[in-house]
Image (tube, rainbow, N blue to C red; front, side):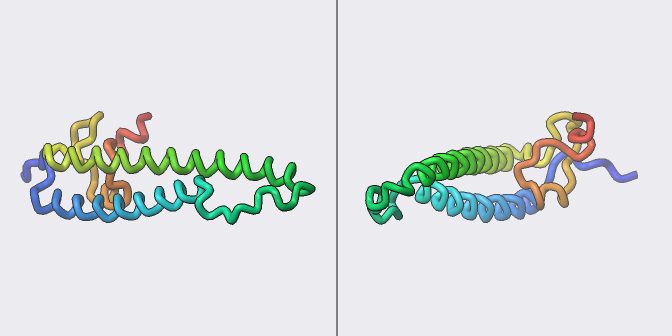
Length: 125
């Protein structure tokens, strides 16, 4: 009977590392977009040119900024999870479920590279 693996091989970890680096690059680009849309960099300075519509626009502007801020916060959290996954790769603990101690499936890690729970553990939650 084949012994169950306790961790992924260095070659497998390298594959996951590349996936995570690609996701990180994408996530940073998305965060930069969100941050630039929150700052008034792209505003053309027409804030005070049409005061009659200002009240309605202010309300939707605030709501839009709040939504953008929430998206940016989620993106920052995602980036942190990806960086934590890179640390686990360096420690060679990547891909090990923190509840069951078993390996998380490669398919799951390819889709959610920052996962720390196996499907089995996630269902138990």
